[in-house]
Image (cartoon, rainbow, N blue to C red; front, side, top):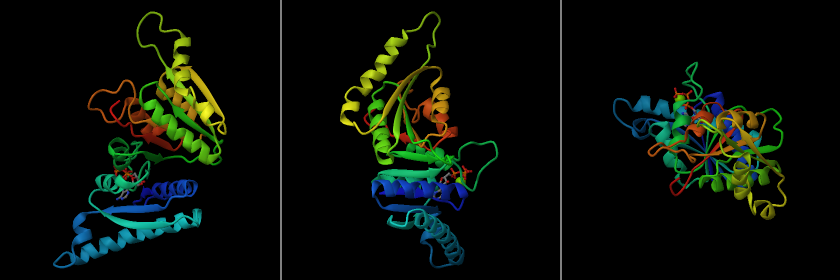
Length: 276
Ligand SMILES: Nc1ncnc2c1ncn2[C@@H]1O[C@H](COP(=O)(O)OP(=O)(O)OP(=O)(O)O)[C@@H](O)[C@H]1O
Ligand SMILES: [Mg+2]
């Protein structure tokens, strides 16, 4: 099951359209969720019952609009809608526990000028238990390529598996990008040793997935810059929630953090399981 959060914003509808497409590809059902305060969901008598009913109605019409969009995009996908209790971040994280994927827009109704990503979008990307896609600019005509950012950490395997599955579903090529920058003074490691990182990660993958065209690149530069550039016009950019440099206690690595802000394509944050 795929779940998408909506809040009445255009970005939420775009996220719904993307999620419906993904559901069609995966032949999975789609759940559309909208969170309203718990009291508004539960209260049905007393002084504020009318306000609560009014809020539920508002929430239901947000869901209905999104459901119509999903049906228009992908008539064959099974869609259900649900009002969720509580603040949107926690409600979506809870509701997504049994989901294969949680999808949100990069911003919502509360958009503050100058802020690149909303608090719900950022919060779920950082804290959800599973994989999250933040839908931003959907390229008009994506060029048929899924881009995966790989740093050679244990997370790379999971990132690669997700990206491969997406490339296969979309009949797209897979571009695996390993960016590296030598932070210290003096000469850094040979470029050859960086290439070996990618070679190790990709070993066997090509044989197991002969149907996917895989391009690999080792690029010198800051990973955020390199991945931004590589992902422009791509169908999807895939990164891990944390990588090599993860500081204990930090839920998102710095590269993922920066890309959640402004990736030039829909961004999948693959939850790194089992530590780093
Ligand atoms: N109440 C909600 N219920 C379900 N999903 C929501 C809700 N609010 C936001 N979302 C999801 O999160 C996405 C991002 O919205 P978010 O609220 O993070 O941005 P914002 O409204 O611009 O900023 P903020 O709320 O932090 O001021 C939305 O496109 C939608 O997918
Ligand atoms: Mg909001």
